[in-house]
Image (cartoon, rainbow, N blue to C red; front, side):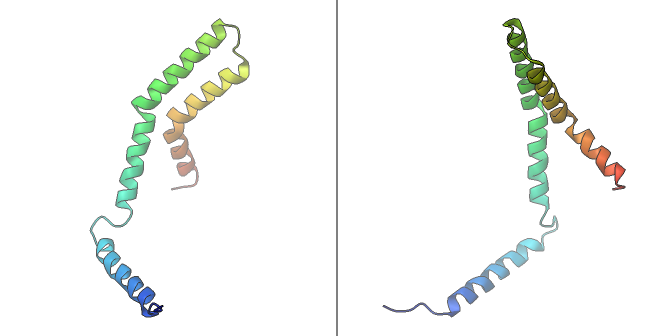
Amino acid sequence: MKQPSRRVPYLTGAMLLLMTAGAAAQSGGTLQPVQSTLTTLVQALTGPIATALATLAVIACGFFAWSGRLTWGIAGSVIFGIVLVFGSAQIVQFFQSAVGQ
């Protein structure tokens, strides 16, 4: 059986470097696609989806309270989760301003 050439990994690496050089030279930089994807994800998770989920969580807490099964731990967890989801941007901004960024 014929052995593959030892030059194949080096040629493959060189080809990959040449292909990525053009992509890195684009005007937006390499972080632009990542930043736009993360921004879209944050907007989706803190927008209407999060509002609907928070509403359903409060409704579930109401049903638990109505049936006598709501504990302070469950209620506190729901409230704390809602505060974290909707207040996450303000929390991050607070810490950024605290360290001078």
